[in-house]
Amino acid sequence: MTVQLDPRPPVAPAPRTGRRPPTMRFSRLDTKYSPYLFIAPFFVLFGVFGAYPLIYTFWVSLHDWDLLGSNHPFVGLENYSRLLEDADFWHAVVNTLGIFVISTVPQLLAALWLANLLNRQLRARTTFRMAVLIPNITSTAAVAIVFGVLFGREFGMVNWLLDLVGIDAIEWKSNRFASWVAISTMVDWRWTGYNALIFLAAMQAIPRDLYESAAIDGAGRARQFWSITVPLLKPTIIFTVIISTIGGLQLFTEPRLFHSGTNPIRGGTLRESQTVTMYMFENAFAPHYNFGYGSAVAWLLFALIAVVAAINVLLLRRLGGTKPPKADAKSKEGAR
Amino acid sequence: MNRLWSASRLTYAALIAAGVMSIFPIYWMFVVASRSNDAMGQLPPPVTPGGNFGANVSRLLDNTDAYFVAGLVNSAIVATTVTVSVVFFSTLAGFAFAKLRFRGRNALLMVIIATMMVPTQLGVIPLYLLMTKLNWNDRLPAVIVPALVTGFGVFMMRQYAGQAVSNELIEAARVDGCNTARIYWNVVLPALRPAAAVLGLLTFMTTWNDFLWPYAVLNDPENPTVQLALRTLSDGYYTDMSQVFTGTAIATLPLLLVFVLFGRQIIGGIMEGAVKA
Image 1 (cartoon, one colour):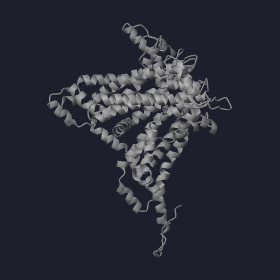
Image 2: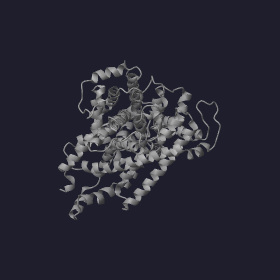
Image 3: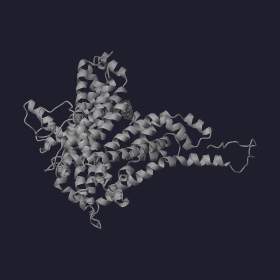
């Protein structure tokens, strides 16, 4: 039942000098403190489950930290020095970088080309956009299992297709380079359409009269693409490269589920496609449960990501050589 | 009209080829899921659906080693809870950052943006230790609680609230005697609804899909998420592939459903985010 709470007497309370009425004091407190109340959940939850673990990883990495052991002696940088001499770790680093290079480069080039196609006057525009985005929204685990079968040795569809054109069956799971290619195919399949849509959004922001005047000057389609579209897209390209670097170097689900049977966390009997994240899991969780060593792997992975991202940005800066386009200033303003 | 903008037949052919390559693995997943186990050994491989889907589903549900139903229920609980929470907290904080004045606003926003750059793997081990201390290992809160807020969500809502909610409207509500919480609930939240919907869809899909963290923290095979149940199925020693593919198909189905219903909004959200990022 509701009660009408507002039948105030017509007589206004005598205004007191000195003190403000309580509602006004409340509203002062409200405007001053409620913003902090509104953002507090993020900072509290992130502090406990995001920031604290991050810092704590470093602390753990300085210890001989066995899950089953009761005390965890401090060992300083020993985990790191052991890791730098660990052949299996470097093997995983090479795998990760190899898969990263042969997936990211074709993926971004294909996405650029696909975006260029999608940027034309099309019938069924939305259908095409949805079709190329579908791989991105499906379950990674499910798709990794499906690709594992497509790349099977005996009855896999890929080897069957290769056989049709006269190429011998490839050992996708036990040949190191072939397994990189198979896993890169999964990654490309998943992310090309997504990146294409990001490029498309940036392409649509390019003013059309630029193209019109270029056409009057006699520039053909290809020339317009390389001289207008690509340079103006540079900030977006840098953005996608950084995102792909962060994602690509952390690759886990695809290579983990590509393998099955005994010890799939090793990425094949001879660690053919074990990535750094898989190596971290192998050490930190089953079978070794060595948290200190696993944490050291995590920090070196972070360093690797930072170095590769920096190299990429430097390379891309050089590549274009044109002055920073307008979109750059705009994106900075958006982030401010 | 510039030739650059008109689509030739070649453009359509290329786009159709790209579309077919995008859809084929998913289509094929449903083909194998609807056939008997012999399909896996056939050359050429079958490319049309068979009539065995129902039988495969009941075999999958009878498989007591996979805990597939438990996985589906768990994933539904986790994804729904996380989605509601992320949308609520992100709109709340996004509104504060876009429309309210307070000390340290810009610095705090920078912290949020910085959190988007840090790789999740870095925190997996101590998070696991933390869960052990809280006694949450092998239980759903371990998967739910760390995902209740995201920097991405706050940032996205802050960007959207800046243009979707006018300052005059907020001032008018204040003059009418609304406190800040009421303004959020009655003025801001309705205005943010389209962007909040996109954030909700993206969050639901990411959470449903997540593999790495559940894999680390949910070790009890009887209490998996659906993705972990798939792992158990496919790692098995005997490989009943039509059963595995039925599982992958069912695990993908909710995502496809969401995408078919809201694909336009999701694409809009991704493209919008890209221009402003």
